[in-house]
Image (cartoon, rainbow, N blue to C red; front, side, top):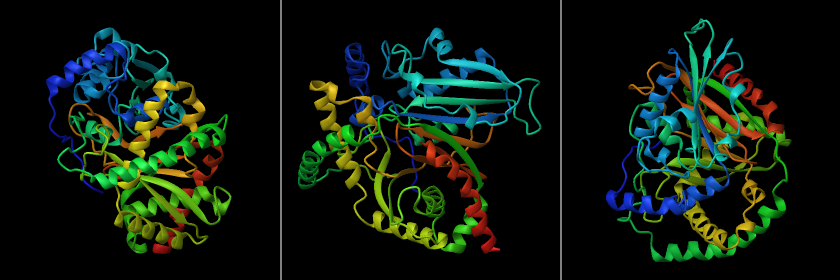
Length: 426
């Protein structure tokens, strides 16, 4: 996995602040990039949750959230009355935080994971919420006194932000595109032409092929990192390929899930080689992959590893740059023909079977995450899409699923598949 940091490229911050204060009076999302605009309109959400040795009262929780917003000033953007970069007043902190008591932690975190659509109801509140549950009677036998969950619009937070905040580090984005590294005019012309041809097809497909209703569900798994490393080494593949392969093999269920021939997927990665054509906010880059199906588990995982080799040996910027071009066009069209951009449009997943996201390692350091206990769970929700987010920590890694409900029963098969590979390793 490539390294990541808070580093951004030079910009005039005073100029940005002046523009921000003028723009958000008319449109709270005026400062959003095209990618941010799309995720906001699609009502995408992300979450972070973990158990804690510490308990919370309202004052402590509000102080924690104020500290988090100081480290991630993007949390102050995107709502009516926003003052980008400024501290939240007490009444706002109280409105976006909540605490409740529970008898035990049985079934958590799955028990309280949801689509987070309440974030988009009150337009005058920030686009995130922080909830805490506290165990009656104090900590349990595992030392868990509480559990905290941060739920945010995906438009203002991504996996690298979560990793940085877990380390109590600043996660301000600044300008993430690199004006000093130009994409050639030939490439830009290619992306423009491709988007012109693809956009009408995408628009028609979104309105005709998107399901009217989609029932979504959530699930999580935890695996020991040393165990995954051992199995991956025996197979001679990346740990990432092993995890991708286990998830895809289990959910495909011998071809009953998606196909007996191939699985169309998107996976994400961080790339420190930024260009002037990159999004100004997001660090993440999307790559398209077609995984050939095999009924033999080891063979399938080996094929997944080979597919990743092939994809990353090519131009890894192509899909993201084409996506950026299309989103720019959609945003422009939406200003004149807003009726084309209904919930059904944003529910369209491009006929991809699965989205796989490996976020940077989450390791707790500093005051912000003092008392948090592994495992750490992070995930995302997009209406209609099957998603799995992989979150490595010091000792374990969590798999966090948001997907159509018909696939949820197959999540339980993943552990059995790993057992099968681990037994063979012994």
